[in-house]
Image (cartoon, rainbow, N blue to C red):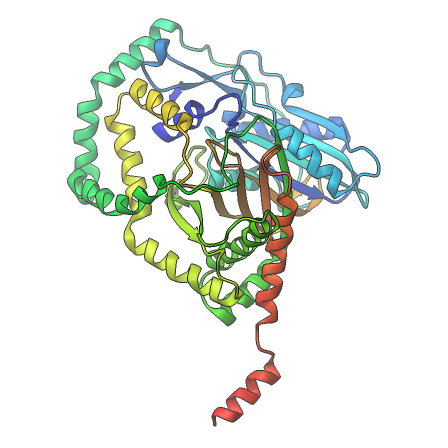
Length: 467
C-alpha cells in the first residue's frame, strides 16, 4: 500500500463527468501489426517493470486521507489491451477521429488506470498504438520515461518471459481509516521536517512563493474569448508535425530556445484560428505552461512532479520573427520571476501542511468556478532521442495527447522523438470544431520562420557590404 502525494491526488479530485484527467500518446509503427497473442506476451513481459499497471486506487472513509495504491485482485489484461481496425479507407483522418472517441471516455476508477489500443489499418501497411493513462499515475516527463520502458531500442529484443503474479491483499476500511487519522495527526511534524530539509527553510520557500505569485494574480483577470467556455465530455484531436532540425535551425537564426520556437509557432496557429473565427487580436492568448520539477535522480518514478508558469502568446504580432522575439523575452522574464518556483513551493506546502479532505474540497470547488484568465494549456515534453520498437516493429512517429479541464476548450502538447517534433491538439467537440485551422497555422508558422533564415549566399553578401 502506497499513499499518493497531493499533486497525484489532485488529478483525481478535479476529474468530473466532462473533465477527463488522462494523458496519452499515439505511436505509428511499421507493419504488419503483431497478432493478438504476440502483443499480449509483449505487454505481460513488461508489466513487472511497471507495478502500477496492476494496481488500483482505494480511498479512506470520508476521504479523510490521501488515496492509496493497492494491487488489483481481479486484474485482467484483456480489459486494458484492446484491438480495433480503422474504417475504410483507413488513414490519418480516421485515426484522428478514433483518438477523439477513445479519449472521450473516462477510465474506470475501479480498475488500473490505463488502456492500450492496438489499431490496424492506419495506411501504408502501418498500425498505431494508442496509450491512455490517468494523470494521477504520471506527468508528461514520467510518461515519456514510461514509453522508453515499455518499448525497446533493439528491434530484435524480446520481452522478459511473463512471471506468475499474485496480488497482495488490500487494506480493509479500518486500516485505511487508521492510516488517514495518523497522517492528519502527523501534519505538524511533517511541516517541521520540511522546514529542516528545505535549503532556505519554509520561510524562504514562502517568500519565494509570494514573489512568484504576483504573476499568478492576472490569471483570474476576466478576458472573454471563444477559447473558453463550459466544456462537454466529447473530444476532437488532431496534430501538426515538423522536425527538430528545422526548429533548431530557426533557433540558431533568430534566437531563443527550442521551447520558445514551438511556443511562437503555437502563437501563430492561434492567431490564424482567432482570425478565422473573426475574433479580435487586440489581446494575447494566456496559456498555462507546465514546468517539470523532476530532479535527474527522480526520472523513472511514476508520479507527478510538475509546476507551472503563465505566458501570453503574442497573437497580435503579425511578423513571425517579432513574434518569436516577444516569446523569448517573456519566457526569460518569467524564469526570473520565480513563478515556477512559487508553484513548486505551494505544491510542496500543500503536500505536508494541508489536510487531504480540505485540499480535495478546495480543488473540486476551484474547477467548478468559471474562469477566463487562462485560455489554453501548452505542454512541451522531450521524448526519447533514439528509435524505439514494439514487438520488433519500428515506431515511426509519436504524437501526444493533453486533457482538457475547467473552461479551457483547447490544449496543445508538444513531443519530440528521434528527430521529429509533433504537436497533439485536443479540442472540446462542440466548442472547437475548427482545431485543424490551429494545426495548419502551427505548420505555416514554422515554415514562415524557416523562410526568413538568410541563405549562405545572402549572408556572404551582407558580410561583404559590411566590410
